[in-house]
Image (cartoon, rainbow, N blue to C red; front, top):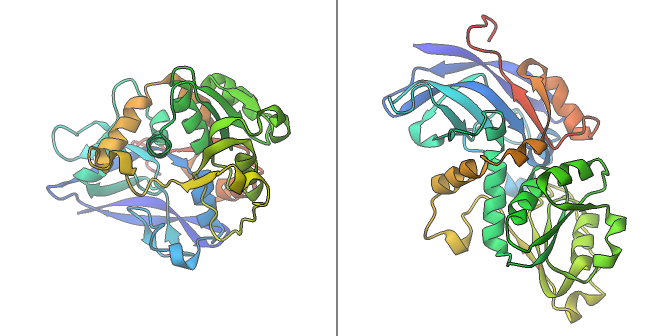
Length: 334
């Protein structure tokens, strides 16, 4: 027996549509999940939407439950929250997070879902994958008590990193973004805010800079903010874009470093102690923090996703995390 569902597909670069999806009956080690919310990862997903995945990264950038291949047609996404309708007794009726594309219902192995803790609202739980990225980044960066840190780029990842850094005693955190509207988000996250042209007094004085803007200008600013011997941790994914940097100034004399971090591997500092599932479970526990609601800046019904995605990709729909809501299963059109 199978169940009818619907899924969002990128059918060609810059255009998406909702297509029928066949969901099989779950096996003994599987769960049937009915979607409640999903989140759009504006960095990676908009690069996928416009067809910007480089040829040599197509296998690396596959999502866990992706269908199709880059550039298109492809069913892509990885921030999904739903309710288990069929499965083991301990999960039946539980709200779970899954790295699944935008789809009204789906069947996945039991090991692919993680229960959302009590006290974490389902909509906020879509941030689990992004908070997981931030956790991994801090394991890579190893910030210290009292550090002066800038986070350049106030998107989903940058905001999650800033909130976690704010919990380190004595850590002075500034969120930097070209959009002055992100000042309100920064305030709700408990960190300072600055425009790129407003951090002049901090140039050459930061112990750590985390870069998430996915722009060459943002990466250059990150280097300019560093104190001698300090590091830029780069979390941006640039897709097929080329980045140019001016390295003729203090880059060599100050012995500055650029280090990449990516959630696809558990940070080396914790690899012997944490599995992927344990890291994700930690991220969900951290989402008990109400401050993360500041990142949830818009919501649309699933049916409107083909119209919403182009607006997120071109920036006309401004958002930190735009969520997608699904109609309850009692609705005959679900």
